[in-house]
Length: 344
Image 1 (cartoon, one colour):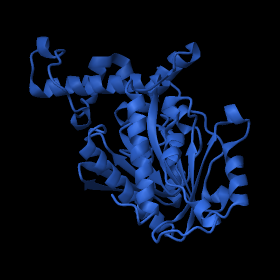
Image 2 (cartoon, rainbow, N blue to C red; image 1 turned 90 degrees about the horizontal axis):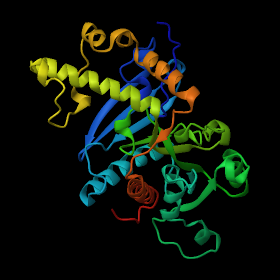
Image 3 (cartoon, rainbow, N blue to C red; image 1 turned 135 degrees about the horizontal axis):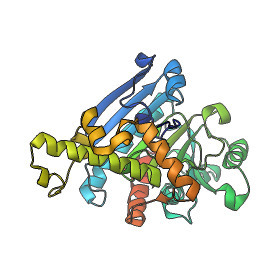
């Protein structure tokens, strides 16, 4: 069976490099940090490593919140603390301080719930630029911050990057924090991961409609991107499900269950901590399909679904409340990171 190789679509740098071997492995560095029930994965990609893995050089933080309940008040505070901690580190790395002038950009379409994260964050952040402009008395610890939700090209007819470029040419801005929906290659990370990076972002990533990027190279000021994977396509769901089935079968094999019990699912399985079976068992379970690599499997599924218009984008049924809670967490973390007067 010959299958063309494609790359599984993901905007998460950690997914792009995790478990892979590169010629310049020393230029792709992964570090893990546990912080209040939240796992933080820091990926540093240098020049040569970036060319190999297809990501821009820079620092990428993946905040894994899968071990929390994002609707629980205490867990939300832990997530907020983690996002604030990481964002402050990124800001410091770009020499951004209380005296710097910032622009918060909420990317996305506020009429489409999975794509409304950016605009919802902009609705919630504290904006202060007008106070500085009008000469009002501003308390110590307040930074000069403005915000904009530029919409999407389909409704404005204008490239988002052109709108942002026009804005920063008109007003004095030292840095941008852009918030957008992303894509992930794992269904377990949808609405359960937050990526923060100093490399900028391409608007529309989450819905597979990338536009001109917002980055330091394009705008000549630091662009910090905050993103959450909010949708996943049918190819990813199918490929992940096959992977989970293999892990489940292998778990049953390792437990030595009887043949008649192997398809009985009686408990929740943590697939991330379950290993895949040996190659001979994979082929036994899946036939020739089992010999394909992950990318080849995804390519085959893609070639079956896409021509028939079946590679739909899917979002969890709890998307409304998830987006609202995540927007609140991110906007509060931005406020705490930019204004020292804002209390936790």
